[in-house]
Length: 151
Image (cartoon, rainbow, N blue to C red; front, side, top):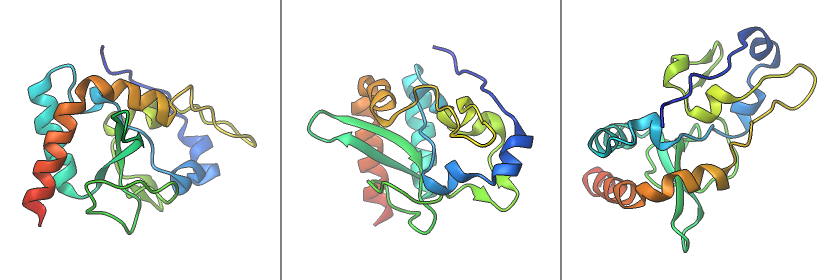
């Protein structure tokens, strides 16, 4: 699966001020980190999680439904975090500090709208965690490795 480029409308986002980014960080997909190339995926996940600015969240630990997202501002450094709200670590007063192509897929695909809720195009925690399911072992191995070298 190739990485979708996305939808961007800086004029609408500038007027809005990033309400979505102030509420909850976007959801990254395995392809954002190099999947289906598992070696690239592992390397990129290690770098991202080691930075402290990305974290592993979950829908259901019992079902192995995990996903990766940017950390919540003020809570950087947690390899695992299950916070339901908070501002994205990459949001600045001028917008997202990440280049558009480096943002999580759900952020790139968000359709901004004026005076109404933006359209997430189906990128929910449940949907994105299903996409991570086939990479569960890699995700957990890398996250545990990062945790072990961080402490």
